Length: 444
Image 1 (cartoon, rainbow, N blue to C red):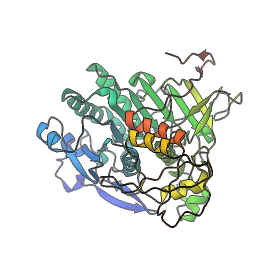
Image 2: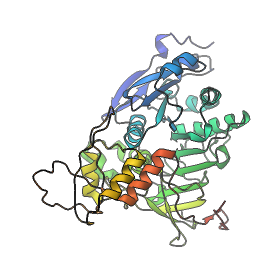
Image 3: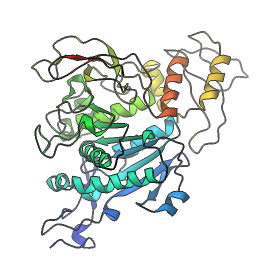
């Protein structure tokens, strides 16, 4: 007989291990005799964030029309749904959920729903968490169906999952299709490997789960699954540990265990976050797979972009190199100095029309840095920084000039197009390769 959910043994505790929060429960959730009873409404929370409430979540509930109407949920904005991994929480500081949320809200008008299912992913009960995936996924799928029934267009949804959350996303996609709802995109960030080895019945994320499934592999063979499981699979730095900079970063923070466990795994969501700000930061080449894991038989040809800017027509495996510290992408607009300058400010875009007007009005030479103060009614910002020079330079401004503007019209317009539509920018399509090495035509 399962323990009641109100039992003290079913409580969730936060532990700090090497400075990182870990969520622990004395007893697992599940259906075993010594498990805590699963209460979906309490164990799975849907936390809404928008620009009107970027820091304080509004909890939404399945079939609760009144709460949905009173919330800041906007049916005209794209919806990003994010699922954290094992031992994480949607509210944990310096963890993937909050970082993902901040990235999207700084980039455009989005509804961001963080699914907190930490009660079902608490340490050390990994096997139980995997066993409970179908139960958790069905409840999450019912909530998505509820939004669709209330009038939200499924075509404007983007489901993103990290590690164990990526595998749950596959369950959700399959369940929704049983109700005739096909998600337009699922992004898997280093999908979990333990208990999801190739051929395992637990493995559920696949290209059939959405119209477009893109995967980023960063810790293949340890915590992440190295097998290709999407329409397009990206392998930065070979897709395995150690990712560049991990050893130096973890030693500097006195987190020796993190060198082998954690750092390379979380690089997947760190790379993705950077791609939200800079959709073309991670150019990649098609990789003809060799017999050696993480290497290419040929150098590759055909440009693509890893992360948020990935073209939905891509097929096959792609390889790229990254930097060992932010900016990780080697095509980040403005180079490291511009990235660090931008990272020190809160970046939020203006409306698409305003950007176009500014680009028409600003006829500055490529190496000039100009500045403009912009007022905008928004919770997070009053100043928008735009970049028009590929490399920052310093010029003396007249005394009447008060601010600094930085931006490239080409990069900015593509970035805004992504924020406005919720899909990646249209780039030249590239032929992909199947597992047998045969080329496929991406044009639809």
